[in-house]
Length: 247
Ligand code: HPA
Picture 1 (tube, rainbow, N blue to C red):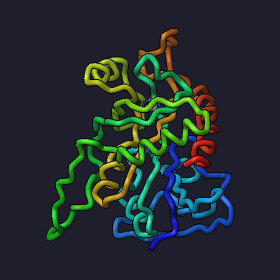
Picture 2 (cartoon, rainbow, N blue to C red):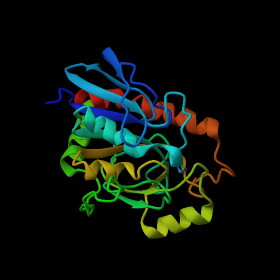
Picture 3 (cartoon, rainbow, N blue to C red):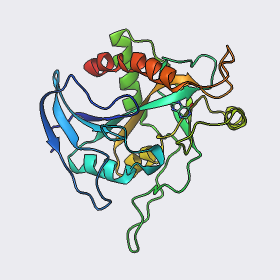
Protein backbone atom coordinates (compact mmCIF):
# COMPACT_ATOMS: atom_id res chain seq x y z
CA UNK A 1 0.00 0.00 0.00
CA UNK A 2 1.28 3.38 -0.94
CA UNK A 3 1.62 6.10 1.64
CA UNK A 4 1.34 8.87 -0.97
CA UNK A 5 -1.96 10.74 -0.62
CA UNK A 6 -1.86 12.29 -4.07
CA UNK A 7 0.49 13.51 -6.79
CA UNK A 8 0.77 16.97 -8.26
CA UNK A 9 1.96 17.31 -11.85
CA UNK A 10 3.25 20.86 -12.25
CA UNK A 11 2.94 22.62 -15.60
CA UNK A 12 4.46 25.74 -17.09
CA UNK A 13 5.63 28.09 -14.34
CA UNK A 14 5.30 25.38 -11.70
CA UNK A 15 8.55 23.43 -11.53
CA UNK A 16 8.75 22.63 -7.83
CA UNK A 17 6.65 22.55 -4.72
CA UNK A 18 8.77 24.61 -2.36
CA UNK A 19 6.65 23.75 0.70
CA UNK A 20 7.47 20.03 0.62
CA UNK A 21 9.43 18.80 3.67
CA UNK A 22 11.57 15.70 4.18
CA UNK A 23 12.02 15.39 0.50
CA UNK A 24 13.29 12.32 -1.33
CA UNK A 25 13.88 12.30 -5.06
CA UNK A 26 13.10 9.16 -7.04
CA UNK A 27 14.26 8.23 -10.51
CA UNK A 28 11.85 5.74 -12.06
CA UNK A 29 12.70 3.81 -15.22
CA UNK A 30 9.55 2.77 -17.01
CA UNK A 31 8.82 0.50 -19.99
CA UNK A 32 8.17 3.77 -21.85
CA UNK A 33 11.43 5.49 -20.93
CA UNK A 34 12.21 8.18 -18.39
CA UNK A 35 9.64 10.58 -16.89
CA UNK A 36 10.11 14.32 -17.46
CA UNK A 37 11.99 14.71 -14.16
CA UNK A 38 12.77 13.00 -10.87
CA UNK A 39 9.67 12.44 -8.82
CA UNK A 40 9.92 14.38 -5.59
CA UNK A 41 8.14 12.88 -2.60
CA UNK A 42 7.69 14.77 0.63
CA UNK A 43 5.49 15.90 3.44
CA UNK A 44 3.06 18.76 2.85
CA UNK A 45 1.43 19.46 6.21
CA UNK A 46 -0.41 16.25 7.16
CA UNK A 47 -0.17 14.83 3.66
CA UNK A 48 2.46 12.93 1.78
CA UNK A 49 2.66 14.21 -1.79
CA UNK A 50 4.53 13.33 -4.94
CA UNK A 51 5.50 16.11 -7.31
CA UNK A 52 6.52 15.83 -10.95
CA UNK A 53 7.46 18.73 -13.23
CA UNK A 54 5.75 17.89 -16.53
CA UNK A 55 8.13 19.96 -18.65
CA UNK A 56 11.21 19.05 -16.60
CA UNK A 57 12.58 21.25 -13.86
CA UNK A 58 14.11 23.67 -16.40
CA UNK A 59 11.18 23.67 -18.77
CA UNK A 60 13.16 21.75 -21.36
CA UNK A 61 10.41 19.39 -22.57
CA UNK A 62 7.87 20.84 -25.02
CA UNK A 63 4.20 19.83 -24.68
CA UNK A 64 4.24 17.56 -27.75
CA UNK A 65 7.43 15.85 -26.51
CA UNK A 66 6.40 15.16 -22.92
CA UNK A 67 6.61 11.43 -22.20
CA UNK A 68 3.10 11.32 -20.77
CA UNK A 69 3.11 7.53 -20.56
CA UNK A 70 6.34 7.41 -18.56
CA UNK A 71 5.07 10.14 -16.24
CA UNK A 72 1.76 8.45 -15.45
CA UNK A 73 3.24 4.95 -15.32
CA UNK A 74 5.98 6.11 -12.90
CA UNK A 75 3.47 7.74 -10.56
CA UNK A 76 1.32 4.63 -10.52
CA UNK A 77 4.42 2.50 -9.92
CA UNK A 78 5.08 4.56 -6.78
CA UNK A 79 1.57 3.77 -5.59
CA UNK A 80 -0.13 7.06 -6.53
CA UNK A 81 -3.91 6.69 -6.91
CA UNK A 82 -4.86 10.35 -7.36
CA UNK A 83 -3.35 13.01 -9.57
CA UNK A 84 -3.92 16.74 -9.53
CA UNK A 85 -2.67 18.13 -12.83
CA UNK A 86 -1.76 21.81 -12.94
CA UNK A 87 -2.01 23.22 -16.47
CA UNK A 88 -1.33 26.71 -17.78
CA UNK A 89 -4.06 27.69 -20.24
CA UNK A 90 -5.37 30.56 -22.31
CA UNK A 91 -8.87 31.85 -21.54
CA UNK A 92 -11.52 31.77 -24.28
CA UNK A 93 -14.71 32.32 -22.27
CA UNK A 94 -15.35 35.91 -21.19
CA UNK A 95 -15.28 35.08 -17.46
CA UNK A 96 -12.02 33.12 -17.76
CA UNK A 97 -9.44 35.88 -18.05
CA UNK A 98 -5.81 35.91 -16.91
CA UNK A 99 -5.16 34.78 -13.30
CA UNK A 100 -8.42 32.76 -13.07
CA UNK A 101 -8.32 29.26 -11.60
CA UNK A 102 -10.59 26.67 -13.18
CA UNK A 103 -11.38 23.01 -12.55
CA UNK A 104 -12.67 21.92 -15.98
CA UNK A 105 -15.21 19.14 -16.32
CA UNK A 106 -14.79 18.38 -20.02
CA UNK A 107 -12.13 18.38 -22.70
CA UNK A 108 -11.76 18.20 -26.47
CA UNK A 109 -8.55 16.68 -27.79
CA UNK A 110 -7.02 18.42 -30.84
CA UNK A 111 -3.56 16.91 -30.37
CA UNK A 112 -2.07 14.48 -32.86
CA UNK A 113 0.78 11.99 -32.98
CA UNK A 114 1.21 11.67 -29.21
CA UNK A 115 1.38 8.11 -27.88
CA UNK A 116 -2.01 8.13 -26.17
CA UNK A 117 -2.57 4.67 -24.75
CA UNK A 118 -0.83 1.99 -22.75
CA UNK A 119 -2.46 -0.57 -25.08
CA UNK A 120 0.30 -0.18 -27.58
CA UNK A 121 2.00 -3.51 -28.12
CA UNK A 122 1.00 -6.72 -29.83
CA UNK A 123 -0.71 -9.09 -27.46
CA UNK A 124 -1.68 -6.60 -24.74
CA UNK A 125 -5.32 -6.48 -23.74
CA UNK A 126 -6.97 -3.54 -25.50
CA UNK A 127 -8.92 -1.23 -23.20
CA UNK A 128 -11.75 0.97 -24.48
CA UNK A 129 -12.06 3.04 -21.33
CA UNK A 130 -15.17 5.11 -20.69
CA UNK A 131 -14.15 8.74 -21.03
CA UNK A 132 -17.59 10.43 -21.00
CA UNK A 133 -16.41 12.24 -17.88
CA UNK A 134 -12.69 12.74 -18.48
CA UNK A 135 -12.06 13.97 -14.93
CA UNK A 136 -12.98 12.14 -11.75
CA UNK A 137 -16.05 13.96 -10.35
CA UNK A 138 -15.34 13.21 -6.67
CA UNK A 139 -11.72 14.29 -6.87
CA UNK A 140 -12.73 17.44 -8.83
CA UNK A 141 -15.23 18.29 -6.11
CA UNK A 142 -12.58 17.77 -3.43
CA UNK A 143 -10.34 20.29 -5.21
CA UNK A 144 -13.19 22.79 -5.47
CA UNK A 145 -14.11 22.33 -1.80
CA UNK A 146 -10.47 22.85 -0.83
CA UNK A 147 -10.33 26.08 -2.84
CA UNK A 148 -13.52 27.30 -1.16
CA UNK A 149 -12.12 26.49 2.29
CA UNK A 150 -8.93 28.34 1.35
CA UNK A 151 -10.94 31.35 0.19
CA UNK A 152 -9.47 31.10 -3.32
CA UNK A 153 -11.94 32.11 -6.07
CA UNK A 154 -12.29 29.26 -8.57
CA UNK A 155 -14.59 28.28 -11.45
CA UNK A 156 -15.93 24.73 -11.18
CA UNK A 157 -16.63 23.81 -14.79
CA UNK A 158 -15.45 24.41 -18.32
CA UNK A 159 -14.29 22.63 -21.42
CA UNK A 160 -10.52 22.44 -21.95
CA UNK A 161 -9.48 22.29 -25.63
CA UNK A 162 -6.07 20.62 -25.89
CA UNK A 163 -3.91 21.76 -28.81
CA UNK A 164 -0.64 20.43 -30.12
CA UNK A 165 1.64 23.40 -29.51
CA UNK A 166 4.24 24.47 -28.86
CA UNK A 167 3.07 27.49 -30.83
CA UNK A 168 0.03 29.42 -29.68
CA UNK A 169 -3.10 29.32 -31.83
CA UNK A 170 -4.35 31.59 -34.60
CA UNK A 171 -7.46 33.70 -34.00
CA UNK A 172 -9.33 31.51 -36.51
CA UNK A 173 -8.36 28.35 -34.62
CA UNK A 174 -9.60 29.83 -31.35
CA UNK A 175 -12.83 31.01 -33.04
CA UNK A 176 -13.36 27.42 -34.20
CA UNK A 177 -12.62 26.04 -30.75
CA UNK A 178 -15.10 28.53 -29.29
CA UNK A 179 -17.76 27.27 -31.75
CA UNK A 180 -16.86 23.73 -30.69
CA UNK A 181 -17.63 24.65 -27.08
CA UNK A 182 -14.13 25.10 -25.65
CA UNK A 183 -13.75 27.56 -22.78
CA UNK A 184 -10.00 27.17 -22.28
CA UNK A 185 -7.06 26.22 -24.43
CA UNK A 186 -3.86 24.51 -23.38
CA UNK A 187 -1.32 22.05 -24.73
CA UNK A 188 -0.85 19.42 -22.05
CA UNK A 189 -4.25 18.12 -20.94
CA UNK A 190 -4.06 15.11 -23.25
CA UNK A 191 -3.15 12.30 -23.41
CA UNK A 192 -2.31 12.67 -19.70
CA UNK A 193 -5.96 12.47 -18.59
CA UNK A 194 -6.78 9.34 -20.55
CA UNK A 195 -3.57 7.57 -19.55
CA UNK A 196 -4.50 8.12 -15.92
CA UNK A 197 -7.95 6.69 -16.69
CA UNK A 198 -6.42 3.63 -18.33
CA UNK A 199 -4.50 2.96 -15.12
CA UNK A 200 -7.61 3.57 -13.05
CA UNK A 201 -6.19 6.63 -11.30
CA UNK A 202 -8.37 9.50 -10.14
CA UNK A 203 -7.38 12.55 -12.13
CA UNK A 204 -8.46 16.21 -11.97
CA UNK A 205 -7.11 19.32 -13.65
CA UNK A 206 -6.49 22.68 -12.04
CA UNK A 207 -6.12 25.13 -14.91
CA UNK A 208 -4.35 28.45 -14.37
CA UNK A 209 -5.18 31.11 -16.93
CA UNK A 210 -2.01 32.78 -18.18
CA UNK A 211 -3.41 34.91 -21.02
CA UNK A 212 -6.42 35.58 -23.19
CA UNK A 213 -6.46 33.07 -26.04
CA UNK A 214 -5.82 34.54 -29.49
CA UNK A 215 -8.49 37.09 -30.40
CA UNK A 216 -10.26 36.90 -27.00
CA UNK A 217 -8.68 39.89 -25.25
CA UNK A 218 -11.44 42.43 -24.61
CA UNK A 219 -8.77 45.17 -24.96
CA UNK A 220 -7.70 43.78 -28.34
CA UNK A 221 -4.00 43.57 -27.53
CA UNK A 222 -2.29 42.95 -30.90
CA UNK A 223 -0.23 40.02 -29.67
CA UNK A 224 0.22 37.71 -26.70
CA UNK A 225 3.32 38.63 -24.69
CA UNK A 226 5.34 35.81 -23.13
CA UNK A 227 6.52 38.08 -20.32
CA UNK A 228 2.92 38.87 -19.51
CA UNK A 229 2.03 35.15 -19.60
CA UNK A 230 4.70 34.38 -16.99
CA UNK A 231 3.69 37.35 -14.83
CA UNK A 232 0.02 36.28 -14.76
CA UNK A 233 1.03 32.66 -14.23
CA UNK A 234 3.12 33.43 -11.20
CA UNK A 235 0.15 35.25 -9.65
CA UNK A 236 -2.14 32.27 -10.30
CA UNK A 237 0.47 29.74 -9.19
CA UNK A 238 0.93 31.51 -5.86
CA UNK A 239 -2.62 30.46 -4.89
CA UNK A 240 -2.06 26.74 -5.46
CA UNK A 241 -0.33 25.89 -2.14
CA UNK A 242 -3.31 27.36 -0.25
CA UNK A 243 -5.57 24.93 -2.09
CA UNK A 244 -3.21 21.98 -1.55
CA UNK A 245 -3.07 22.71 2.16
CA UNK A 246 -6.86 22.22 2.34
CA UNK A 247 -7.01 19.10 0.18
N1 HPA B 1 -2.88 28.48 -25.97
C1 HPA B 1 -2.43 27.23 -25.71
N2 HPA B 1 -1.81 26.90 -24.59
C2 HPA B 1 -1.63 27.87 -23.67
C3 HPA B 1 -2.06 29.18 -23.87
C4 HPA B 1 -2.73 29.50 -25.08
O1 HPA B 1 -3.15 30.64 -25.35
N3 HPA B 1 -1.71 29.89 -22.78
C5 HPA B 1 -1.08 29.02 -21.93
N4 HPA B 1 -1.02 27.78 -22.47
